Image (cartoon, rainbow, N blue to C red; front, side, top):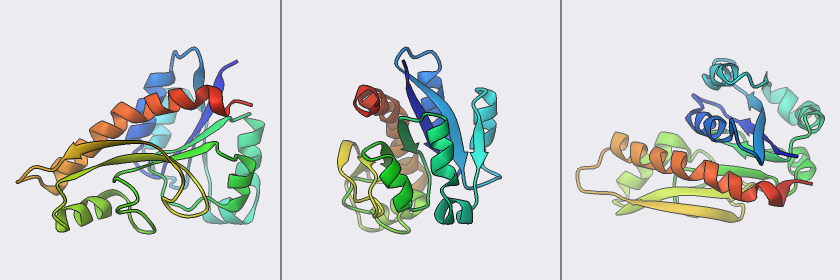
Length: 192
């Protein structure tokens, strides 16, 4: 029996793409659902390309109903991966999937985490503070932005002359390299 993975994304879904590719013919895990809060998100096209079901939900549906939890349960999801998903996860979802929701963050937490710290906002802050390194953090999700237990971190050096675009690319390369492997390492632990 394969571990069943659901991916939440708000944007283009490049991490979702890497996860979809990695688990397309995997013997232990499979992506069974893509969810987004953005009906224009390119991640929906990626889901179609892999013939994976997708679901677009509203803020009201996510926070005021149990519809998303019911959908995940009906799909027998074992692991929820937030891959560029920008909303705080509600308590009902955390309760339904304890220690089964992970997130990827484009910085070395606890630095540059919290509300509003995502994407370019993180990289701009890293540059503005003259950091010599940055990286990614993959962590469990709790009721606070970016405060769950760290599972894995990977670093890159910031060189003189690096720009927003160059450090964004370095971070994205680490995300694409590490996230699928970290998910693979969790497969047996999260399956019920």
